[in-house]
Image (cartoon, rainbow, N blue to C red; front, side, top):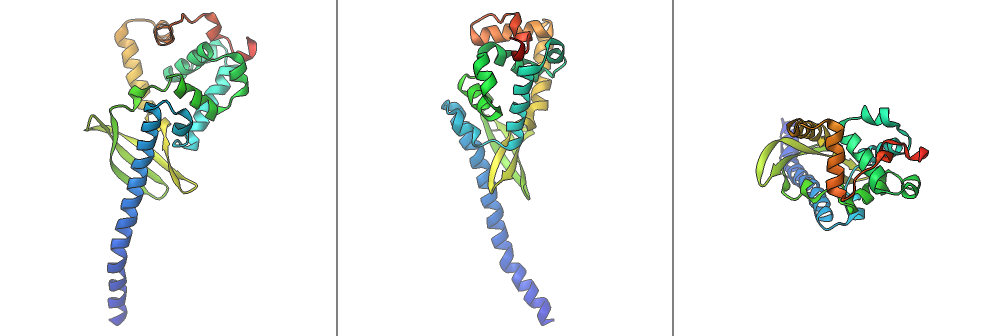
Length: 213
């Protein structure tokens, strides 16, 4: 019986400590997003990239490889968001820079050039956070209102990092709906969007792999 009371007493002591630790993790998760948002809004690409996880960096590395090597058929078979990313990078970034950069640097450049727009974070916040080991999810709030979507975070080397790729499926679906509502062919819509955002009409070279240009 004494043993039972000792265990119970220890548990009662540990519960407040665990609660505080959990709350600390949740605050750190929110701070990661807040720091990323602040960096995006202030055009600080290097600081923004420090808040994203290795999965996000790997995604931009894979996009860079497609920019360098994918032919028009391969680009056309890509997801809508990937296709736009490939075409706009070929349109706006020089061959010399493409051939000497890496995934992390590409994301920095994309942020600085407005390819990762301020509108993607301006009205967004992280709501309730759930932490499970080295994984965390946080409610996506838009103008303070809950949405069915969530940000995802991974703890890497003791620090929480934002996974930008977690929201890509929802973004892809929304983007496809926009194309459908426009009534334009998919590729025509993308090229028009690139022209509007860059101020320059994209030429046929955007469909040619950088290695072949």
